[in-house]
Image (cartoon, rainbow, N blue to C red):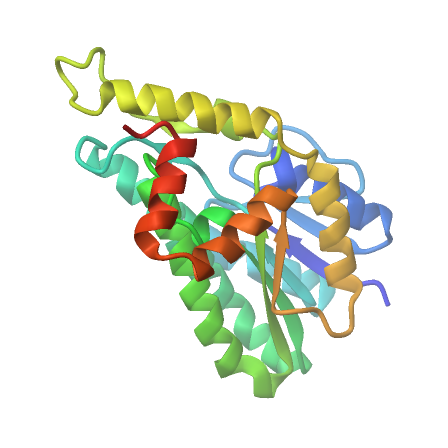
Length: 269
């Protein structure tokens, strides 16, 4: 059965590709953007800003009035912030958490009454490998994704009796616009920032990993399978063998040993 799907953040990356593939499969797809500049083919474009609560409520209201139901919510929208914990400006930190976590929470809260009344639904929350492993110089990005992990785990138990499924997706490195769109705080020199040189070295590794990552179509096709599955798993880790192995190894090795592996990879001296 074709489903009514609301997916956030379709202006680029995972969101844009996933929305297109879901629509091509025959689903009624509503994709959110902060600024409507053009149409997106068979995807219905909806204006929504996750940091603007009235815009969230208005978007959900309009979709529900038009369709009479919303079967799937895909909380994809997010942002990346790069910089050290000590030097990252407060406004960067707030925007990171308000976009990746608080906005997602408010949108989910708007959808829960709809899904309860219609007898069920599916919520797909985008976390990250960085939601399972803390990443250096991306502390607040990881913090926002760790928060999604705990939120989803608790929510799943609360809504299970209403036949609402909660799925967490943990992508690894994908070649999207993350590197270009990452909001970075770069001090002019090491004389002004004690983390300057380390951040530059680590950022080069991060961006190289992203540039060599999988195409977003791979993840989009997996999202389609999750949407169309009668009994989706609670979690899908989607990434290279090495990235999946890192998640497993973290559970096995002593924390200090795993930390040294990460420090070596990210050139933390």
